[in-house]
Image (cartoon, rainbow, N blue to C red):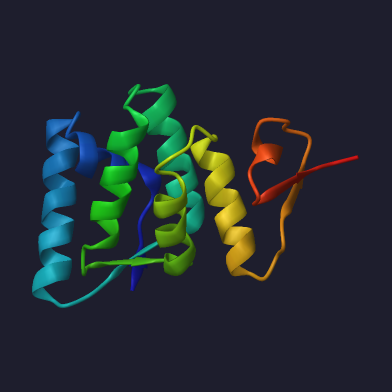
Length: 132
């Protein structure tokens, strides 16, 4: 199995560099034809969120939809997939920072009760508690 970096998913989702997007397409087709998986670390998803929000100014809804669609791709194997699925569900009806929610859902999947934070907005979620 091979892992993929954030820039591979960015090219896949945006197609902003035609040559690189074609290379990514070929990588995916090869994995599919060989019935192999490409590993996606959780940190890649965290970075993907940051890049899509800050560089491409993609809406929250589009980011969540894109991640949900990526999860369904049989050639992609995600680190902590259940935490990632829970993240996409928990981020639907609120305005908490997506990166913070991903961190909290990953921690919860590892048995944490909450994530301690100084972020007052995040601490309003039951996934966090304000550091005192």
